[in-house]
Each structure stands twice: as structure tokens, then as C-alpha cells.
Amino acid sequence: MKKIVFSIGLLFIWICSINAQANEEWASLLRKGNEQYKTGNFEEASKIYADALMFKTGKDITNYNQGNALYKQNQYDAAINGYKSAFEQSSNYDDKGNALYNMGNAYYQKEDYDAAIKSYKDALKYKPSDKDILDNLTKAKLKKAEQQKQEQQNQDQKNNKDQQNKDQNQDKDQDNNQDQKNQNKDQQKDKNQQQNQDQDQQNQQNQNQQDQEQQGQKKNLTKDELERLLKMIEGEEKNVQKKLTQYKTGSSGQTTKDW
Image (cartoon, rainbow, N blue to C red; front, side, top):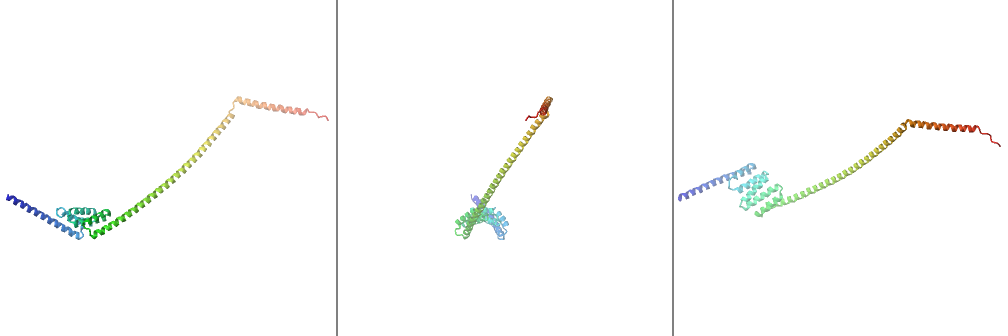
């Protein structure tokens, strides 16, 4: 039984030794990352912090520092994730407030002022007298008001432009309709003129055909008709000669009237 107790004791010492070694490695990486951060080498610092996150120790601190390094590289979404992890893993009120404050700054840089305002308000729950948080909250509210004003102006401009386009389209439609009416009117006029011309031409053709038929009738008399016509003409000439002869005879046989 004593041997078992002794073995358990050795295991505990060995675990503590491993944990101590891991803590030392984590602490060493954290120091190296901080040194790179202080010199402005934020990209290298974030790589070292990523290695430090492989250890279970101090994840809240590492995530917070990682968030700061990413923030300096304008990687705001990744920085926000780091601050969120730091907030969830930390048990210290000040550290939680700082994580929320920096999260608000990242949202502010993204111009997501609603999220920034919420983060600053949450940070004040942990650090109610922090002047920086109050100042940034005020700035975020002003930016939000400016953003809303700009959005309203943009909407008004869009509405005005849409109305102008609508009016122009209506005018264009009216012009097109009027042009179509005029075109239809001209086409109808041309059609009527063409119909009149066609009717005149048809009438002329009918008249010509009628004249030709009449001329044809005159030119195409039969032999019998010609003989009858000649006999009529001869008969009329004989009558005329007879009357003329009678007239001459009567005139020469007249006597002088007695007084």
C-alpha cells in the first residue's frame, strides 16, 4: 500500500514538473511576442502568440495580446475574435472591460458603430468610471448620427434621381406615343391618297375600256350593216336632189302678178 502511495506521489510530482515546464515555455513565448509587439513587428508578434495559444496556460492573456497584434495589422475581424475569447476566458473584471473596450475600437474602425456602441456600453459595466470608454462611446454615437444623416441624404438623392428618371421616361413615352400617332396619321393619309389614286386609275381604265369598246363597235360593223347604212345615205341624197329639183321648177314657171 505504501508503494502505491509513493507511486502516486511520483506521478503528481512528474505532472507538476510537466506543467511547470509548459508554463515556462508559454511564458517564454509570451515574452518574445511582447518584445516583437513593442518594436512594431506586429506580424511576427501575432505568429508567436499563435504558438503560445497551443498551451493551456494563460489563454485569456494570449488571446488579448493576439487581438492587439491583429488590430495593429488592420485585421479587425480576427482581432474581434481574439478579444471575444479573452473576455470569455478571463475572470478579472478589469481584463474583461479592457477586452470589450478594444472590441469596441475594432468595430469603430470597421464603421460598425452600432456594434461599437454596444461594446463600449458593455465595457462600462466592468469599468464604469473609465474616461477612455466614455469618450469613445460619445464619438461612436456622433459617428452613428453622421452615418444616418449621410444615409438619408443618399436615399434622398436616389429618390430624386429615380423620380427624374421616371419623369424622363414618362416624357419619352408621351413623345413616342405622339410620334406614333403622327406616324399612323401620316400612314393613313398616304393610304387614303393611294386608294384615291388607285380609284382614279381604275376609273380611267374603265373609261378607256368603254371608249375602246365603243370605238370597236363603230369599227367592227358587219357587211349587212354597212350596206344598209349606204342605202340610207343614198336614199337621203335622192330625197335631197328631188326636193331641190322641185324647188327649181316651181320658181321658173311663176307668172307676174296683175295690178
